[in-house]
Amino acid sequence: MGPMDYEEAMDVLRSWHGQSVIVVAFVEPGVSLHPFRGDLEIEEPGHGMVRGAVAGDDGQPPTRIAFPSGTFHEGVLGCRAARIGV
Image (spheres, rainbow, N blue to C red):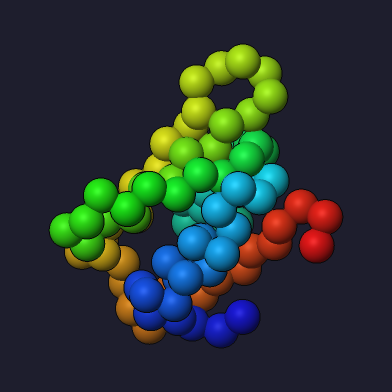
């Protein structure tokens, strides 16, 4: 996938609602946080905000991630993503 705007990126997330995913958060090129996996749930409270919650099967509370439109860097961000089993 090439660079995409905020709505295109959020459309990808919306299409993965309810799917098993692996999340790798990159701090900078070549440096990432520890990956985690679980089922993705998407919430859209409005006001330019999309939220994701990734719930594993370990009984722990889900990891929550916010995707505010104001912090999205159009033209800079490319997206590499894959669903488990696809």
